[in-house]
Image 1 (cartoon, one colour):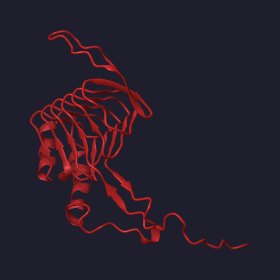
Image 2 (cartoon, rainbow, N blue to C red):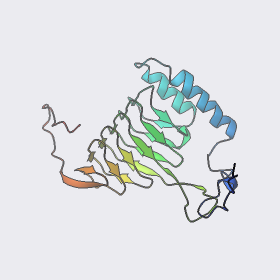
Image 3 (cartoon, one colour):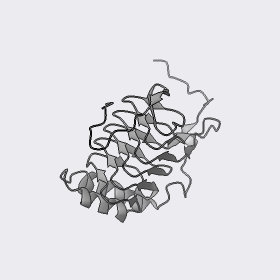
Amino acid sequence: MERRVSEKPLYQDLSRFSIAEDFRGRSGLIVLAWQIVQATAFGLSPQPFYLWRRWLLRLFGAKVGKGAIIRPTARVTYPWKVELGEHCWIGDNTALYSLGEIKIGDHAVISQRCYICTGSHDIANITFPLTATPIVIEAEAWVATDCFVYPGVTIGRGAIIAARSTVLSDIPSGVIAAGCPATVRKERPLPHKGLPAESYS
């Protein structure tokens, strides 16, 4: 049987990959403690225990506003790099991949199965090191079901990202964007007080 001869890596050499000592923002022990808490006390908590989950996130350094709704199946990589505004919603199976900072404003909605991704890799470096760029989702924005938000993106106040969109660049305030990559389709109407707003999910 012919034995395969390994070629010298040309684009990325993962045998040389390492994570910078200060990249996580906390010690490996704290990271491990959070992973255990997230899998147990957080992830197994009953759905109505929003106060409990807010407390756990704050315990690990997150800034969480009053009335924030975080589902037990939501996943947060590093809570100490996350800021959640008042009365914002973080839906089921949403991932806040907070290698870099994630800031979500008051009354903003991140719907189920969204992936908010601050992390990537430096493809110009053969050791393939991690990179992190902050994401800002401003107040009253709505990122609908199953969207991907790219590192460094800002989504403006009141903007709506339609379901299953991929957001690769900044989205201005007060618009509806959709697609892969997401582009602005039209202005978001201001709903009349006391009347139901049009649904976009």
